[in-house]
Length: 508
Image 1 (spheres, rainbow, N blue to C red):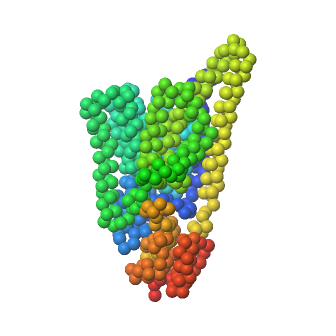
Image 2 (cartoon, rainbow, N blue to C red):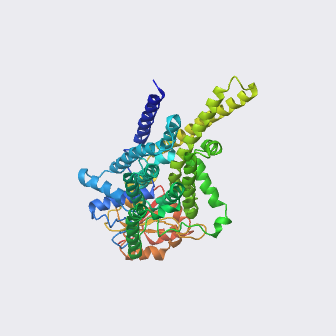
């Protein structure tokens, strides 16, 4: 069997193994306290049960509004809702959609990596990407990151091909994919930095005289601009946002004095993108292959990602926001494959010159190669451990989900409910998106959240006056306001308790 056929078999095996890993929890319902999954699930359900107007996504924690919320273009929950309409409501459809997007992403990444690498380095790059824990996480999660990363990778693959071949078809495909990536998550906009640098490198500043580039920019940006202006208007009118306008993400002067931000960004990169040991392979690629196209463009790409991470440091540095770093996995995989290429080059040089070198030189080269093999094994083990931990964790429904099932019959009075939310502000005093959606989703009720700082008898009474029938209060948040739970118990009857949650009756 020749090397080309062996590589093909390896790539098919990686694709098959990647698909099997992703299938592990594709049938899992939304049973974790994931605010984002619950929000997307609620938007999909509300499309199916209230209105299929894709321009007006609706959330459950809507207060006294119709629920219209500022968010990314809701193509993904709309697709889930169409599945509900066709086959009946089942949360599995969301994961099935994500799974199908993930398989397409693997294929598109292979096409991207093929522009830079071949042989075993290509296989290594595809394997690194396919089994990266972040990529696997969003392969079946009910998040827009899944379809977004597909179009993000596709945009880069078609743009790289166009930049090399000049075929207009590839440029227009790249424009369409870029537009969809930005519509699905505006955070993908940093890819424009990569495109600009590649254009300058290949064509010089004269690319600005190319009408096709201006059309590319219009097709890529205008649909997203129109949508996000509309979404911003929904926020301005109804005050509902999925973490865009109701949270402060941006870098401040304290970035220069507070090491938390850069430490958090680098930690997420090292752990979730490079699986710790993989940094050594990336560094080797830079040291030995800096002049190669794959290394230089991967470094530009990583730089573009870091511009985004630094600009949004108030969020991207947090440990819960590791998903922000999913973008880095793409160039990191290219850099990983480039590192493997350089290692193979060193190994060939070692084999070719074995007889002519001194024993000490041969031993040193052999030890270096053995070290890189051990590093690769360490990365595989770290990835496997993280993926295994995720699968095992997801096999166990969260206790809060079990409580919601138990509490649901207690909430017999129809009408809105009040539910505990997180803190209104971060430790630096900036607003955060405190709205917790999972209880609304599980209880199949609409209503409002109350954040920790706003917990008071007066605010609970105000919610009751607006029609709230129950207050589903979470103990860990009530404890952050000393004496609040005791006052609640003295003012309102407790109708049920389960684990972290206490249900107070607010209505008559």
